Every structure is written in C-alpha cells, then in structure tokens.
Image (cartoon, rainbow, N blue to C red; front, side, top):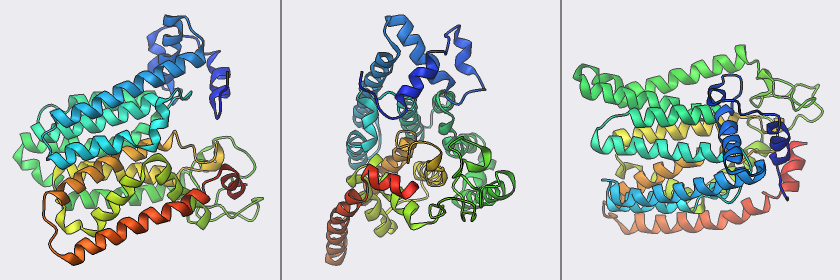
Length: 364
C-alpha cells in the first residue's frame, strides 16, 4: 500500500500498541494516546489492517466535518453573510486534505477542534451551557496535546459564562483586561522560552530527537550549528510560515483577513465571539510560528492544520460585520479591488517557493 510522510513510522510503532482497555486512551505518557486507541479500536472492531483503519476514520471525520459545517448555515443565529462565509471557507480549506484517507493522528484533532469552535460560537449566540465546548476540547487535548493552544480561548469562554451569571465579574472579561492578560501571557512565555526551555540559541542541527530545548526555533543560532541560517525570524522561516498559511487555509481566507484589517473600523472587535475567536487564532498561530520544523518532517502541515480553523471563523465573523454595513465611498471600493488583485497575484510567488525540494534545502 502506498503511504507517505510519517505513516510507515506510525504503523510500525502502533503495531506494538496493544488495545488492552479504554483506559489507555487517557494515558498521560503519550501526547496522542486517545488517537492511537481509537484507530486501534476501529481496526480490531472491523477486522482490518491499521492503515485501512486510519483511512476509514479519516473519511468518516470528513463526512462529519461537512455535515457540521452545513448545519451551521441553518442552526446559527449569526447574520446571513457569516452563516454562509464560515462554512464556505471551511469547505475549501487546504487542511481538508486530512479527510481523503490521510494516515496520521491529526484528522480527529482537526475535526474536534472545529467542533469546539462551532460549539463556542453557538454558546455566544444563545448563552447556554459551556460544557459542550469544555468536553469537546478536553477530548481534543487527549487526542493530541496540540489542542492545548485553545486553552486561553476556553478560559475566556468560561469567564464570560461566569460574568453572565455574576454581574460583579463582568470587568474580568472586558476587552481591556483581556489585552492585559494576553500581554502577561506573552511575558510569561518569553520567560519560559529563555530560562526554562533555554531555546534562545539552542543547537538543533545534530539530532532530530525532540528535546525540551529544541522544541521551539531559536532566535539566534550558535556557531556550532552546521547550518545556522534557519532561525525564528530568518527570512527563510518567514517565507515558509507564509506558505504554510496559504497551504492550510485558502486564498479566500487570506483575502478576507486582509479586508478585515483594512476595514477594521467596521468590525465589532469587542463582541464576545470576536474576542474568543481572536484568542484562538492568536495562540494557535504563535504555536505554528514557533514550533521547530526541523525536528521532524519540514513544516508538519497536518499537525499545524488546527491553526487554520480559528482563522476561518475570524474571517467569517469579520466579513459578516463588513457586509452588513454599506461601503461608504468609491475610495473604499477601489481599495478593496486593489487588495483582492494584489493578494491573488502574490499567490504565484508562494507557489514557486513551496516546492518540497526548495523547502528541504532551506532546512538543511
């Protein structure tokens, strides 16, 4: 059977992964414990090999993803533009390659992350229980630890629920306090990066083993590195990260976000759903930007796919606000047209720089 990427490694490892009982899904030893258990269970239940099990789960997740996206159109109370834009952008996401028989542990993670965002948006519409979002995110984290990037947005979600129940806590989730909290988390993150992970000038060139100090890209590379040109703010990494955004989302999402930035005064940034989605997008992008792509397959796109989901929701909510308000001048209309053409034309640059051989050369 033709497989690619990490699939052969997964199957070799998981052939030793015994499905003794469902308690193994809640192991704290592995970051993908529940995902491995689910795939092993499907293989045992259907009496199929492990690769086929991964492909069956991949396709089933795709069906549930499409169903959920389409149901949002009819069940959501957002304005018509948002109800149409979010599912439309989601269905054309580059990350949806996960749903075509992809053999990896990230397909279930991607589906659960989308369900988490959908359930949170529905909460903000109807002010009902937040437990659905909490349970979905907990399962997502057990499927893969990468879903922990959504914990800050979950804290805001719970804080908002408490503020609705206790009016004395409304100050806690104000836009100003959320900004302070984000800045504080940045300072804590910098401290951890410098003095706990010791990643500022870590040498990751001698091994591909995942170690604490090589998990994130260094800001500056030591002279001992064989190749010291690929660092956090190097032009190579910035180009690769830009390519990644185009790869896991779609041109429509990028254009929508550019328009949102240009017409930001038309957007209600302080509404709870927008703050929640912005937090989810911010922390998932920071994770994708800082993760050291040299410790495994260059730019593990399937792992980083979860960063595309909050971008889609952010773009949909922002454009929903823009499209419900009339364009005020010919100048704005002309500017929008120029932006659309510019972004569309720039795609050629990213396509030319996104070949696997070029990417590998930049990481050597």
